[in-house]
Amino acid sequence: MPQTGNLMMPAARDPMLRAPNGATLMNLSALIGRIEETVEAETASIRTDVKFDIKGSNSRKSRYLYELNRAVGALNGEPLPDEHRDMILRLREKLAANEAAILAHLNAVSEVAAIIQDSIQKSEADGTYTADEFGAGVTP
Image: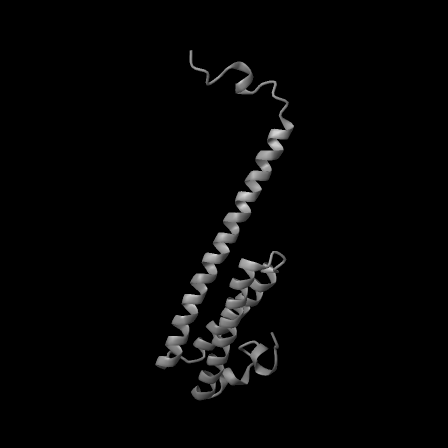
């Protein structure tokens, strides 16, 4: 993803965020768009790319969400236009889908880890003291 100009500047140094409301809103639109792209790419990659750098993606996503918080704060409590509210609602839906993909990924990782752990435990057991060796569970 290309990162140019004011899009990557921290909010405190970004003149667009200190500019009048029109410029702030334009920057807010660009920022929300960038976050959407990042979240969509992460969601798709989690589902398809086993070598996906989830840590790096999470770092970018966190930074962008921090910038969004700063940009909204720069509005000084003024209400967002409907267009921006709609963008934020759409972003919220994409973040929910992203969360579901991350949870599914974590559950899959946990299941694989449990299978591996069970396999290791079984391979280490020599059967000497297992319940099967003593007839446990056998009904008379």
